[in-house]
Length: 108
Image (cartoon, rainbow, N blue to C red; front, top):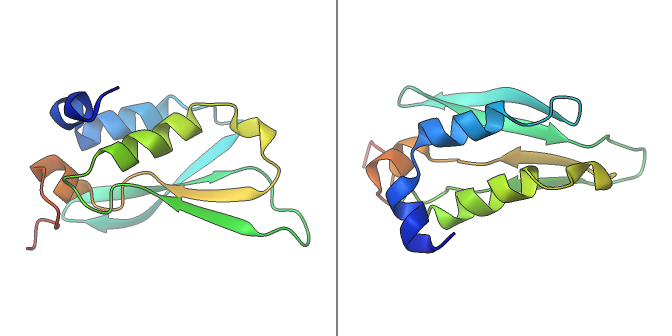
């Protein structure tokens, strides 16, 4: 998907819909916090094994850069069961910025 298509089509409700469709036998979903009325979803992928590192992956830090959100969601929709390390994934850190198409969040 082109950046222009992502920019025109992505809303936080789309992000949540895609998260809701993920296989719950592989991915567990929680809420990291709430920002400006938006629940910031955090997902756990894989199984934490003794001596293995945990990996944090984020997208959507800047609301006007939706390509990062798309990349993280595409990763989650792929064969994540192949990964043995545990990933903590926050597909969209700044949902109000994504909704507004702005770099900063709603407060700025």
